Each structure stands twice: as C-alpha cells, then as structure tokens.
Length: 227
Length: 248
Length: 52
Image 1 (cartoon, rainbow over the protein chains, first blue to last red):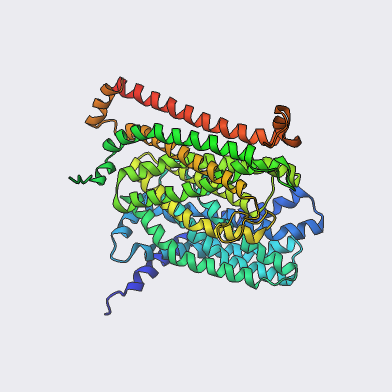
Image 2 (spheres, rainbow over the protein chains, first blue to last red):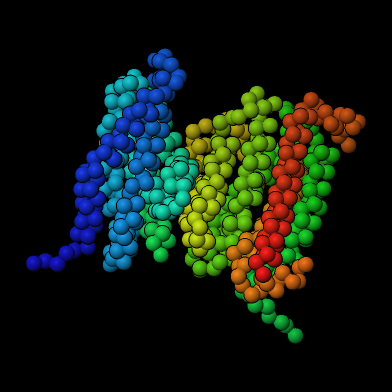
C-alpha cells in the first residue's frame, strides 16, 4: 500500500470542506439568493429605463457578486477555528499556506462558482447581449477566485474578533477595488465595442498575483489567530 | 576619545519614552518654522495662477497632505513589518501611533481636494483617479485602526495590523493604477523631478516647505501618541511607576 | 507683494471661502489632534496615579 503523498492531504482538506458545504446547502443558497436580491434591488431604486439599466448592469452585478462573496467569507475558517481543527492544520507537516489554499479553493467552488453560473441570468435582467453575457461570465470566472483569495486574508485576520462581518468588510473591500474596476470594466468595454481583452488579461494577472501571495499571507494571519 | 552609542537601546519602550519626550518640542518647533516659511511663500511670493486665479493656493495644503498621507502609510507598514518580523513591541507601537495622523492627512487631502474642485470643476466631489485613490487610502487606514481596536490582545493586534498594513501597501500601487485606468480627469502630475515643472518654481518651493512642515508635525504627533501608547501598555512595569514620580 | 490691501487678501479674488475654508479646516484638524493627544496623556497619567 502506498503511503499518502503530499497532495493527498490537500485533496482531503478540500474534499472535506466541499462535503460539509454541500451538506449545509442552506449557506450556499443564502449567498446565491443574496446575490440575486441585491442585483434585483437596483432597478427598484433607479427606475427601469432600459438604457440606464444596460449602462449600470455590469457594475451592479459585479458589486452584488462582490458583496455576496464577502458575506460567504466569514465561513471559510470560522468552523475549523471554533472546533480546534485549525490548530491541527497549523501543526500539520504540510505547509499551512497550501492547506489554506485548498480550503479557499473548496470555499470558492461552493460559494463563488454558483455566483458565476447564475450571473448571466441576472445579466438578462439588465438587457446585456450575448457577447456581454459571455464577457460577464469570463470576468466573474477570473475575478471571484481573486476575491476569495484576498478575502481569505481578511477572514483569517478577524477570526474570533469582535465586529466580525462588518470589520471584515471594512478591511477587505478597499482591496477588492482593482478587481471590481477591471471586472465591470471588461463588460463595459465589450459593450462599447472596445474589446474586453485588456481588462480580462489584467484580471488574469491579478489572479496570478493573488495565487502567489495570498495563501502565504493567509497562513501568517492564521498562525497569528491560533497562537 | 570616540564613544559608541548602542542605538539598539532605543528599541526598548522605556528608553524611547524618555527620548521621545525630549525630541517632541523640537519637531513641533521645526513644524512651526516651516509653516511660517511655507505660508509666506504660498501667499506672498508665489504669483497668481493664470487659469485658476487665487483658488489654486489650496494646492499648498492639498498636495503636501496627499504626499504625507501616502508617505505615512508606507512608513507605518514598514514599522509594522519590522515589528512582525523581529517581534519588537516598540516598532508596532510606532506604527499604531502613526495611523491616526496618516488618516488625518488623508482627510485633509480629500477635504481640500473637494474645496479646490468646486470652484475649478463645479462639483464638490470629482471621481478622478487621485481623489478616489485617496478615498480608498482613507478606508485602508480605517481598516488598520478598526482591526487593532477590535482585538483585545495587544500583541495579536500588532501582528494582525502588520499583515493588513503590508497587504495594503502592496495594493496601493495596484489600486492607484486601476483607478487611473478607470478615470483620467485630474490634472496630470505637475510636480515631477524629471519633467520640467509646468508650474512656477516658487509654487514648487511653497509646496515643499509645507510638505516639510507637515512632516515635522507628523513626527511630533507620532512621538506624543507613542508615549501615551507606551504608558498604556507598559503600565505594570517598574519604570513606569518611577516616571510617575518624576513627571509630577 | 501680491496683494493691494488686506481686504483683497481675505477675498482671494472671490475664492476666499474655499481658500480660507481649506487652511482653516487644516489648522483646526491639527489643533484638535494635539488637544486630543494632550487629553489622552492626562487620562493615562490619572489612571496610573490611581493605580498606585
């Protein structure tokens, strides 16, 4: 029998998180419903003039996805922090950054990916054309993992701290701004006929930078929280 | 005979407390001198701007405040990082002492930017790259201060603040370029060391003098604040009790 | 000298409100910060004395 390899631990952590997320479907659905409700609130606030909605659409959907993703962040480490699993993970032989990375991946699959899938439907509410919907999909696909990665840093810093979700938002939202600008900008550029490729490339670049730095920063923050 | 000072002795809160107390008046004195010089140049030497009239004189506050807001954030992140890496308490205390002053500079930059924008562009708020980046910088300062305020354990607060400050400092250029990409309304940077200045030399001198004034003031305020933080956090140390007797 | 008279100085070519509003708020901010710091100093000293 082969002894477990290094990746097995990562896969096990991710699998466990995904399984518990799928069992607690209510959390997943709450995030999704929040996304849908917020995106639907805006026309009620600003009126239904089609041109206005078409102009607002990308930004509104992006902000709603951003807020929904942030709401879900409180759950990525909180459960393990509460029952002591996090300390075990910190003591494990695998690098904490890698373990954090697999938890964030599972978290994104459970809470970020559904947003990406549902977004085009909301795009229809804002009268985006087929190409716009495609760009929206691509921008969210590239952007939401970045949001999860950056957000994980904030989530690990605020573990067990008073002020919880509101404090997390205050810390994390300024860091989300570049992703929001390029994400919504991609769809708007596409709609204006200027081509979304530069924006999408920059989103990809942000994702790569986040992939390199965020797990490490998250690990540092997790150690601060458990020591 | 050459005497060697062991500079590291100042990394102890007790010795730094005394040093800070002695230095504070000097920094405030320097701030006052630079302010007098700066105000003189700003109002009596620098000529009236051809396009903007007298309203442009707000620049002598707005630009130095903006410079300081960014400079203080970087310095704060550095001290925070040193505190995290070397586990030194005083470095983190200095970082915490810098934050409110930095946030104040950011607020002043935003306020004066708004008061400058109204006569120039007609609105109280302009969503241009520089002002929007300053606004986000203010949020970054608030995040740092709120996080530290919410954590009861001072050492954990120090380290958590360091992580968020360092993540913020890496993000500031990214945020700036993304916001610039997003909007380019603001007048291009007219103070540059490589290009010939598009403003009169006297205007540049005025801004630099005011920047030095703000810098001296910031150090003075930081020294005052860090002394308070040291007393608050080290209250159970023996040296604090003896200081109480000395400073009656 | 840039100014013909004191009233011209205060009026700032019509922009007096904006210019003096800026300088005034800045001075007020610094004054408030120092005042708050002095109050904090007094508070800490009082607490330390009470502790002994």
